[in-house]
Image 1 (cartoon, rainbow, N blue to C red):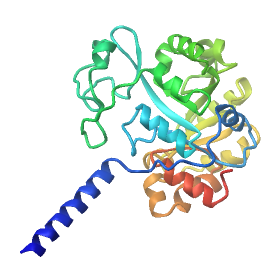
Image 2 (image 1 turned 60 degrees about the vertical axis):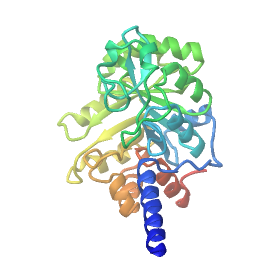
Image 3 (image 1 turned 180 degrees about the vertical axis):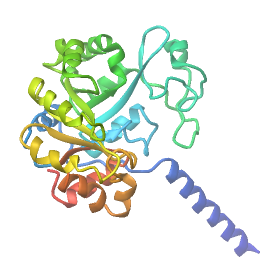
Image 4 (image 1 turned 30 degrees about the vertical axis):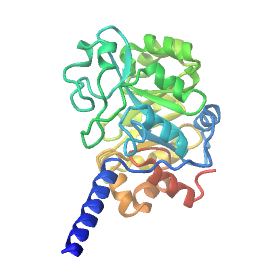
Length: 312
């Protein structure tokens, strides 16, 4: 009887451990190659870069809540180069970190972000990936900028809707040279919207290679804009353009691929990489010339790159 009780206790503890690690993966080991933001920026603007930069999607959200300060901090500690963050604006015009336009999924609140003031949002708590309430609160963009200052580059998603306000915060915090903006605008639209900021802020075009005019878009940007990198998207390896672009962009612009899900890079995503990293990450690097990869598994990707000598 005592043995059965003890066995039940062990099973319960083991099951609890599995549940907790599924919701919060302890991926945050401190890296020995943490660099400063200017060194990362220097790599990013080097068209002949011979290593691979890692971007963490919404921070290290397998360790902490997405778009949270701990998720950013852990990405910095592990040696990630870029953290992708999402921006929303509150009812009283304050900029916060949040992917959704509503509070329901990631916080203890409900309703549209635009209908809540910042002080009310600060009373809420963030939920983790298993929808469990945590002690963390929703951070402002300014808080995130101060945390990242001098340490890492930030890709600000959804920030183009009010970039003048964003840039004011960048100047206030001294982080304007750490920012990447991406989008599908034309070269003319980019210059009109961001022209005053492009000495500091890095803009990357996003090009869907499955569209008929993809090559023309790339050629126009190279002629008019000379971007440091392109984010490229394609659904299937049956598209020949990803391979064709490798020699065309060599020495001109770096190539960025996303491995978040299978339709972004021909199926060579994080899931494929978990089974065989050479078929996933390796294919993007060796065959398609990727020098920037955005991932939901930054610790796993970093270890793979280190084993291959693609990190310092």
